[in-house]
Image 1 (cartoon, rainbow, N blue to C red):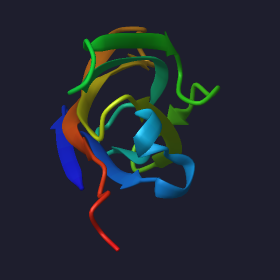
Image 2: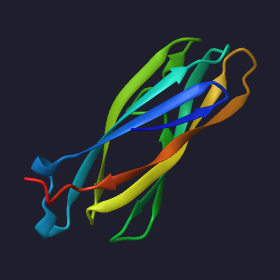
Image 3: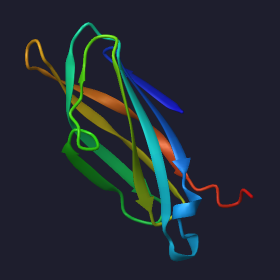
Length: 128
């Protein structure tokens, strides 16, 4: 598990390799990651956009951007949390991800870039 805190917004990420959906002989590795966003600030925020940087040891790094997370743009009042699960496919069993959430402060319309901590994507293909 990795953690980053930006102006009172705590982002925690846990990664799981999914061997049942992966095919190492075909260079296809599947990972899921659970993200928990906790608003410990005094502001009500809405998660508007996300930006991910995905690096794969077997390929060129790529950037993925879009609205919200898994089809949602959650509002987090002070003390609230939002959790979601998403996934990533790699061509190798080794990579990493990091990124940002762009959140709007609902009281003044200003944006806050909240860091998503870098985390490793490592296929545990040698575990039995």
